Image (cartoon, rainbow, N blue to C red; front, top):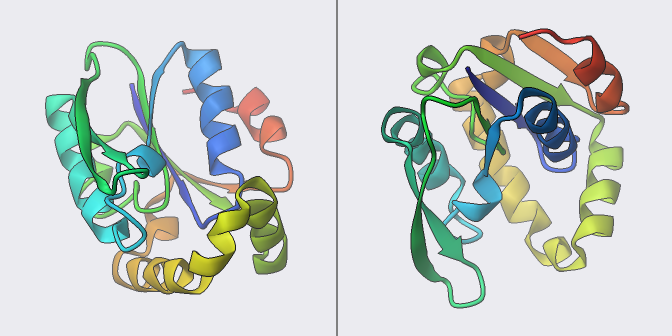
Length: 161
């Protein structure tokens, strides 16, 4: 079982992925650990098909701005890949399920900046990367379900893989 969880920053996808991982006993790869810096959305998205086929991914060390250790997931076990860029035309055929988490822009920004205040200086540039990715890949249309980010717990309790 492979599940992709995508949505814009602050939408609730990390919370949803955590709940699903607990429920499914799944391994969880967060693209926040894969993005090669603040300009790395496209690179991390391009890495997802490789994660799904080889089980290998390299962590990005945000403190040193350099690649860090390699990780390996067991592809025989359930896997969730979560983050902006997880759901693309290249990754969707490799997954069993795909979810898009949606929430209004003001609430997303408030949540994201409350969680990580340093994100404020990068918000505009990151949002522009999200805009380009969404325009190119249309991940919402690739999803099996659109999840309301105001209460992802309600969805995770009802969803059956």
